[in-house]
Every structure is written in C-alpha cells, then in structure tokens.
Length: 426
Image (cartoon, rainbow, N blue to C red):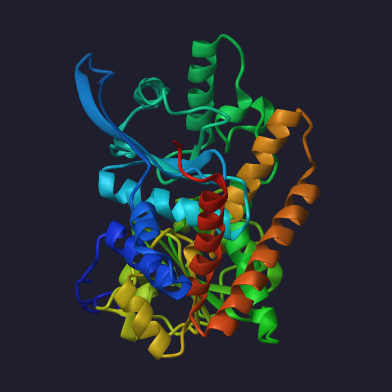
C-alpha cells in the first residue's frame, strides 16, 4: 500500500477534555436515573490545588512554574492518579483526567478514588538536574495532599519511574523514614513491582484480545496501528506482536511509519519514544499521525494524547476496533459517528486500566513488604481486566449501549453505592 505523506488532513474540531468527560458521565447517569443532586456532586471535583513554585535553573536563573493536583472522588478509597509534565497541562484537563481515574478504578473494582496532577512544562527542555529540582519542589508543594493512605501518584505523560523515586524520597525525607507506598511506578529496588512499566500497554493488548475472543475471532494475524510510541504504545506493540498480531503502523511526535507486512519487533530493545530505532529497516512508508488514524487496519490504538479522533476525521477511520491506549482520545461526537458506522470502541477506562491495576498490586506489596514474581503480577492483572471486560460487555448487551457507556454505568453505579453507604458528613 502506498501512503502519500503530503495528503492534506482537515484540522480536527475538538471538545475540551472536561466537556468530553462530563458528557460521558451524563450519559451513564441518565441510564442509571441518578437524581440531580448526585449528578451535580459527581460532575465536580472534591479538591483542587493549584501551586506556583520557583525552580532554580542550571544557568542560575529562577523560573516560576504552575502545577496542579486534583482529587475527583474518594468514596471508594484513597485517591489514585498520575502526574504529567507537559506544556499544555491545564486545570480543566487535570479535572477531566481525575474524573476518568475515578471511573477507571471503579470499573476494574479497585478500592481507590480518582486524582490527577501535572506541571505546565516541557520536560524535554530540562536537564536532569533541573528536572529533579522541579520534581522535589513540586512534591513539597503538593505534600499536604499526598500520602500512602490518602493520595498516591504514579507516572504519566512526561514522567517516569525516576521522577516517582524523587517524589518518594522527598516525602520520605519530610517524614523521617521511607514511605514506599506514597507513589507507585517506582523502580523495583525501592519498592516498585515487576511488570508495572509494561502494564498499561500490555493491558491494552490483553483487553483487545479478550474482545476478539468474545466474537470468536483469534488475534493471530490481525493488523494493528498504534498512534503514540511512548511507554504505552511501545509495550502494546510488543504485546500484540507476542500474541501473533501484525503491527503495521506506529507513530510518535515526529511522525510515523507504515509497513504492510508488519514490523519485526522481536529483537526490539527498549526504544520507546523513538520509532526509528525499533522499526526503521528501509522498507516502511512515512505516514503522519493524522494519516495513521485512517489506515485500513483491524485494530487502531490511539495511545498518544486526548482528542485525536474527532467529528472531523471519525468518518475516515477504517479500523474495525478502536482500543483506547490514551485517556480521552475520542470525542463524544466521534463516538457517535464511529458507532453509526459499526466501529467498536473499547473505552480508555477499561482498555488502559492495566497500569492502575498493577499500581494497586504495587501499593499492596509495599504495605505487606512481600513482593510477587512477574508471573503472578501478570496473571492477576489479566484476571482483573478480563473480569472487568465481562461485566462491561454483559452490561452493554443488557442495556443496549456502547462499551463506553456500559463501562461508565458499571463504574458510576459502584461509586454512587459507596457514597450512599457512607452517607454525607455531618
């Protein structure tokens, strides 16, 4: 297949992440018949912290940055959610992602609520020393909310296990002793768990395979395109390949590559974030991020950022299944268009929940000081994800709704039940 890299792509018309998240919740609330006061309660976030903090740069100047930590709901347990470093981080985006984390934890039945955090910064522009100073200062600023039994961060866009190690160390120094359970996604030698780095991407492939199995279709030989080749996209690609699927297209912020016969990833080293080190062998055609979304593949995995499939391009998506590796990659208008065209969308709160599932395992191991081997981690993650998919799929069939609305029905029902049982204080 020839791909013309010069093809013009219409600029997408995007809803804000918060508009998308609230509209998705509203659809589930309508099906559940939630009273207006409960709807209004769950459309808002419980607690929001905005901080402006100084960071010493390598050239001795001081730069003031803005950061956020938002907790959406904690009726089911401590708040859980990642911290991202990105220049487009905003309070509304963090609110939306915190809400999605509440539903994500609930749909896979973890005893967590939802939170999210972020700093408006391009981490690629910072030296390692600047990044460490930023992280330790930000951790100090949000320390009044963070704790192993009240709010547990994890890596997200632009952050990694080393940043989690700095956050853990900073909060441990404040306390006077080690607090391994204060973050998840840490390096294994300081209380991290085996399998956490691969969990989100691997979980995407597990859920996709389980969806196909419910339709009596094997995953062997299906074609996959993955937009975004960071931690999630990279590990999803490896997992799909190991399952026998054919990864034919991948992309990152520099653009993408398409190869009809599929990429040989069997010997790939850890080259996440750099598609050319993994897949460039001279046979691939260049493809833009926008064009990748429109390739004729069986499975499309948007694993980059939110708002990629919109009303402007949804009618050109040719995949039969969209499995959301990123949070909020499909707008509400695009959801409706895809549904009308018979495209199955496996929603983010289910498809990419492998990361938070293994984060929960890490948190449990930190408290017990007993650590599992990789086989046990992977086996339990797959069990949790498959059970969640079964509940969501049966709800979708019974209620005659999309998988997204079904996942939200399951999640919102669990959260509202917890609120009802606990009551309102005072």
